[in-house]
Image 1 (cartoon, rainbow, N blue to C red):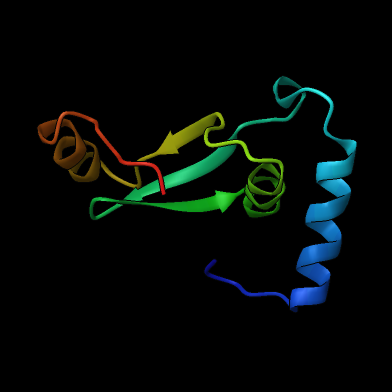
Image 2: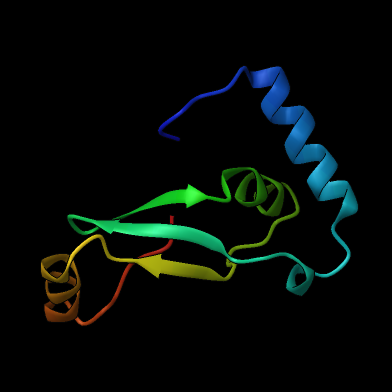
Length: 84
């Protein structure tokens, strides 16, 4: 996470999200930015934390390229990004 929050706050928020989760399709996708071959989550870190608590390995994401050269770089790699 680029902007860290206190651990107790993190656990409280992610637990509330996890407890409210009935169907992963009810949650909006996270927004991720492609940055030099890596993904940086720009919106949705708490949701990802909740999904991980529940054992989900995947979630929907909108992929954002800050410029055309980033898009072209990713295109040359075949648009493959490994999950963490």
